[in-house]
Length: 513
Image (tube, rainbow, N blue to C red; front, side, top):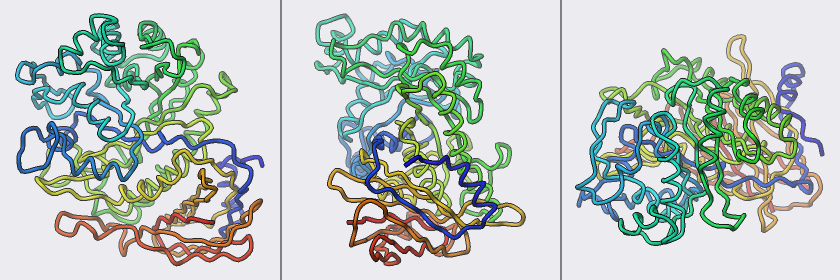
């Protein structure tokens, strides 16, 4: 079945005001939903690393080599596949050699981007890569292009990837306590070089990228271990940037192109994370839905130069962005996480799933205590956010086969503006169990959905739901489980027809056998 672009569906839905119907071709899937779509991002920003992942020698909080164990346990349940580090804007001021060797000998640095705080570099390359091993997650390193050198990034690749004794860098690695390489596959060649990474023009950066990529060598002769170089990509709708990357960088030097987009109301007036109006909620949903158009249009440009889709689109920064919590450092970007964030997460992950032919990694910004975090900490306490629960519910899609679907949705209307109320994606896992993820973003109306399952007979459906009484509801350190997944009883199946009743602003994942 041909998968019709969602943008066409949106136009059709606006005209017809169709009832909510989904047709799933259960036997026609071929694209695999890359597990890395469910990736995360950890920057040296506010309390994400220090006082987040890393607590050093704080004896009050159980840790291993300074890494907080309750966070590791929580993220393991998410099946976190990949973690991006050390930035973000921070990456292009970070010099990796300052973060290796004895901790008491490491030089301090000034974090010029995020609050002007001084960091002691006690969390560095070994700490991050060992933490990824604890998580079972692939590391994704962002290289310093803005203030670094070709030699510096080339040495970093050798330090973490080359075999023992093969060059001076592995010898240095062994002197610092690690004999075997970590075999890091994913490498970002700079970050947001159109802005904090150097304020470069795309044509200039394309040449810089080519220079850096030339000296980023693989660690052995196994083609399956080839490093994956990612060009710093567009800021939201800068389509010319993607055009230049695809046109000017030889494709044998390029494995991925990045894209960044945040669901922010207005960069000058972002709104409170918890005390927002329905209009502010609606505008946030509009910005989140915009990801569909962005992925389509950037993919179309990539298709022109790369019709076989060998080069991946990495949406390696995405999420909601609001005003910081009252009384916190404005540069630390600490914000609460409500049902609005659950809507952003569910809708956006559905978009990425449905474009699995091109989108092969995405990284929610950020993991702990920053922006749309999945974990918040306060001294010895942690809480899991609504976004955490959505990503845990959705991890059934990791490495599953995407099932083609066509959707018609009623509209969520506020004043004169309209948005599709229902978002969906579906996949088939290796055990031939189907999972359908559904989101109703409407703030006030339940949505009844008819799902036509074509190609395979199914007879049983179960599900889980994330919902709450108010859009502004969130988990707190006093009430940590106010929002958590529950058994969903609003689905029934008869023959090849599935009937679902979605409450307002809810996320549901169904298992169909």
